[in-house]
Image (spheres, helix red, strand yellow):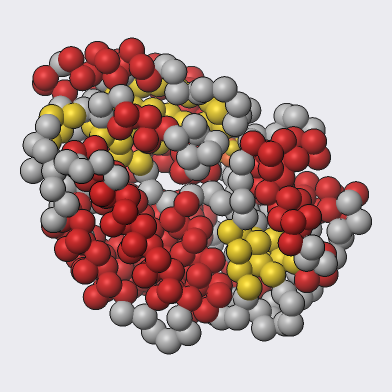
Length: 421
Ligand code: SF4
């Protein structure tokens, strides 16, 4: 089946191009993942925005639930509630507020969030709030190539800092040391990304890796547990009840699919879409642009930063998108746009390539790709011969109780362990 891969932008495509230096303008950034959101907000600050990562907790979620219908996947009420709370707390006038809300494509609801938010804001009398959903269809709202490139660097560095913390923390000899080191480097990177000059990111990352690599660790054997699924919920410790930390508390090492995966996937989708269009010079140029973007921006910098981080992450590199798609396409058609193919493909590679001894598929309640993958994972579980937990989260209760018996079993079995040396 052929899907429309383009984001739903007709209602959110602006007649405005953004001027970050407009006096009093505030850019509100959703708190999807603690490190990436801070660094992306810092990039926005470097071009003049007063960019703030919104607060997220049980109170902000309950605000979101009061303003939505109850059937939306939880990132929707969570981001909406965070924005309403931030508006109320900051006293920011609606005409000065910009809401950063990336959009999406395929059979998924993310493309509808901005539309629903628009209706909610109108009901609240806040129709002047601008929603920033940068995509090629709206010329990225005037955000320059250099800003988009810096956002890519911010996402990669956040992925690497998070991965380093998860690679070392389970084995640290002095409790809390890894978090302290990573926090210190986050402050440095935030300052660097907020700087208007070109920051020495490679040098900073090399120094951060050096600091992390010397954290004293015990060569304890621990099972590696992969976390895949819907990008917002798998990345957001508030919504997923601290899933990765819970795996660590229960005696494992967690490996989380990174945020950069989605960027590679959208590049891949767009290339697939163009490949299906009749040949023309303009189409050829678009394909060439996407190819160059992948090779010269996305892959080039990913490989560069992972090389710098090799002292800690030599065995935690990401597979290419082509490898993920090959694995995922064994279960759903490549043309079926959305996260299902990524979740299935990356889960298989975590087990076959990285040695994961269990997989957690984290999805929001009512998530469409999450429901599809949950129906397919029992078959994959048999093929891979590892436990696969499909956990749905709605921001209430302890969605991670199902980990307890699985982790107990894995920790008892000496053949299922990863060691940090
Ligand atoms: S992937 Fe799932 S949670 Fe995310 S927007 Fe789509 S349906 Fe909602």
